[in-house]
Length: 300
Ligand SMILES: NC(=O)c1ccc[n+]([C@@H]2O[C@H](COP(=O)([O-])OP(=O)(O)OC[C@H]3O[C@@H](n4cnc5c(N)ncnc54)[C@H](OP(=O)(O)O)[C@@H]3O)[C@@H](O)[C@H]2O)c1
Image (cartoon, rainbow, N blue to C red; front, top):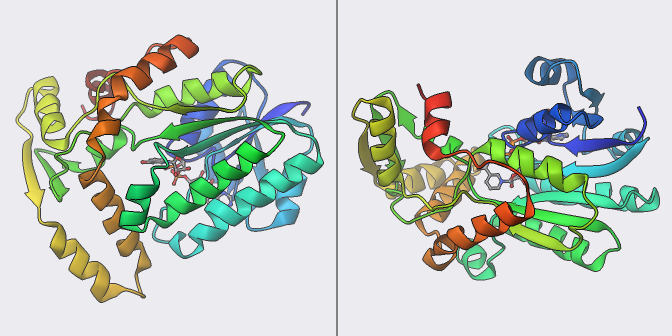
């Protein structure tokens, strides 16, 4: 396959929408995955699948043949992978960049966290934040033609805290937080990777307004026409469980930090969502999916 876009993490929450948008645009796409059969079931027959593991340099090297651009959207935020988070989200990404550099593959789109605000990352001791900062620093000093798309939790997070008639949120989730449909990330990343004029640009990916969990519960209720009760769960229960089960279950500790992040989202950054969204709209050609449409499609 000549000159394809290689996607690391192309089966993930965001990655699958990126791959679908690339396929829709008839852009040759190669998906790097640990399980090609499973990936094919999710993404269909059109992408080329490269089976490998980013923890293996040889398989990264093998995947780079006939590649003109790379999208990196890897994550290890899963119970089974969390012990390897640094290896997957930091070390392997550095290897991908090393090997891409050697082969003079210039165009890189990196899916990162919404904002690399050091103060909050330090406060929560958010390991993943330090990994993303290191990679963004590396890109900034490189000769790559790079673009960073800083992503918040997508609308999927509201769905994952909702069960039938109840939204239960540890810590309450009352601060405003930017969010968007994963479909928007897919479309924007697919447009970004085939453009050459976005070098050294970092975008904060958001819909036009920030959201709080209690407000989203109201909006789900009104779209679905049935009351979704919102309940705040004390965070200390989760914290105690994470301490009690550590080191047997390090995932819980990461989950606590993630939930703390949702509950401490900096208001000043959330309030800039309107402007951040305008920047996206003036740079990319897409129709942003509303929360209501997302609810209609995925929560029915
Ligand atoms: N989801 C969110 O709420 C959120 C919020 C903010 C930022 N982000 C950022 O968005 C990016 C993507 O996150 P996501 O939630 O979409 O990821 P995800 O759903 O957890 O998917 C993880 C992806 O990583 C791949 N992967 C993991 N270990 C691998 C390995 N050893 N070798 C090869 N592939 C491996 C998986 O591929 P296979 O299983 O096919 O091998 C999968 O496609 C990350 O940079 C994350 O920090 C996400």
